[in-house]
Every structure is written in C-alpha cells, then in structure tokens.
Amino acid sequence: IKQANENPDVKAIILEIDAGGGSLIAGEEIANAVKNSVKPVVGYIREVGASSSYWAVSSATKIFASKNSTVGAIGVTSSYLTNIGKNKKDGYEYQQITSGKYKDSGTANKPLTEDEKIIFQRDVNIMYQNFIAVVSQNRKLTMEKVKSFSDGSTILGEKAKSLGLIDEIGGMNEIEKYLEETIGE
Image 1 (cartoon, rainbow, N blue to C red):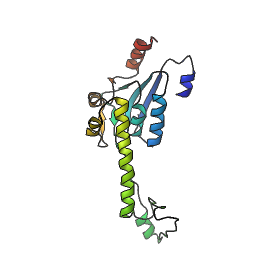
Image 2: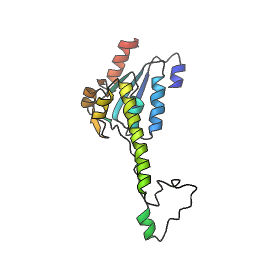
Image 3: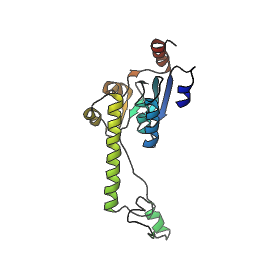
Image 4: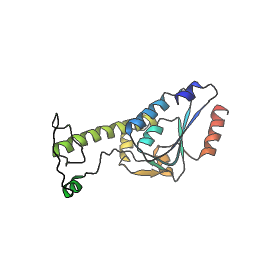
C-alpha cells in the first residue's frame, strides 16, 4: 500500500481478500494502512473475508463481494488445544517453574486455572469491543447495529450488503467499472 501510494502511475488500489482471518494485529495494521492511503482503496472479498481479514478490508473506500461471499465473523477467539491427556498417558508430568503466577498461562501442558480463564476472557472481551468499534467507525455504522450481528458467525454477501458490511455485489468487472466511473481509468 505504501509503495502504491508512492507510485504516481498507480491511481487506485484494489485490496483482494480471500482469507478466514488470522491475527487481529495484522488485520489492524492493514486496515490502518488502507485508512491512511492517499489513493482510493477498493476492497474485493472473493470467497471469504472473515474475522481479521474483514477488519483489514473494513476501512476500504468501497467494498465489493459476491452475493455468495462469506463476510464478517466479527468476534475473537483465544481457544487452544492442550496436551495434558497425552502427556499423562506418555508418562510426562508438568513442572511449573515461573517468575510469576501467570507467566505460563495458556501453556498447552497444564489446565487453565479459573483465574487464568478470567484473564483470558477479559482480554478476549476487550479485543472484541475494539473490533466492533473499528467496524462501526470504518463502515459508519452505530455500535449497537454492529453488536447486533457480531456473534462470530459469517454472513453471505447479500445480507452483508444489507447490514452495511459491504457496499456492492460484484467482482473484478464491477470494480473496474466503478474505478472507471470514479477516477476515469
């Protein structure tokens, strides 16, 4: 995005998304780069634009998707697998040696304590509220409206459009037509 902004031959940026998510930080960094772009950025959700990949595209000038694209999945998870049963079967026993009570929180080799679950849930709730706030701001929707459909599920393109998560139903042909109409190229 930075290179495109510095290139005088580039008139607009098409951000093609086809991912089910990943790191919220990565989504946030891309969304900020899009938001700070001096050139128009058109988002194109192919099959999937969910979770952090939706966060990334949410700040685009305009977002296109197929009526059958999977959009949204506004939510946060910190779930993981443990090795506790396997380790016990294999004769391993976890020995805690840490500098602090919570230093090994989330290790796959021991169960979470109730206190640790509370801490993880606290952080998930904060990230979830941040996600809702960003979508609300980027898509110019009220926080209440975004909360109403932010249960972690995905939404197909037609419904995503009616909710304001995308702007247009269409693919690359429609994006090219839109750019021709808006920037003349």
